[in-house]
Length: 114
Length: 113
Image 1 (cartoon, one colour):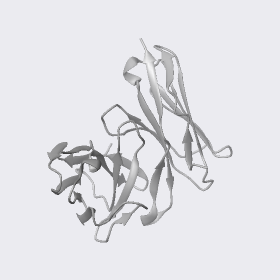
Image 2 (cartoon, each protein chain N blue to C red; image 1 turned 120 degrees about the vertical axis):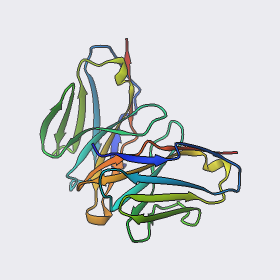
Image 3 (cartoon, one colour; image 1 turned 60 degrees about the horizontal axis):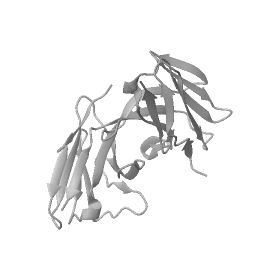
């Protein structure tokens, strides 16, 4: 299947700092990417849809000023968690459409905010 | 009513048995259906996609789709301990730039050696 990478795989930061997570489609172009968050033993929660060249679409309840998404190219989307707090600690996963409707996931980024 | 529903389990089966995972969905217009496997601490991995009514087999996995009943299932034959994971049913909703996957809450499967 298609390969989606994420960087970094783990990050630990202090409260109040910002963290950027990169999501790349390695062997295909992805006009649409998605960002999910998953807390321990809970379901995936879609945070936002990232479309290349346009503003991201955020799900209800997700603060767009806190979770900044930039999809500047057909292979790269970034999620920046601004002024991170301990409650933002979670597993962040991106995915991308390959073809018309199949989504492949990146390996995820585990964020710990101290 | 949730858009995609799964039995949360946990489901336990002995090694070598058939594990049966079920999923129902609410949007009759849905056309694409997927099963993902998620190991603890890892991201979801696509294992099957199905688009037409009937069965689709891939190795030990068989996906079954019944659009009239709005029902999707996954059978795992000769279950192995390495199959122990959470299985997510996903349905594509929307179209064009608005398309996205809707996930069920997942079924936790444990295969007992």
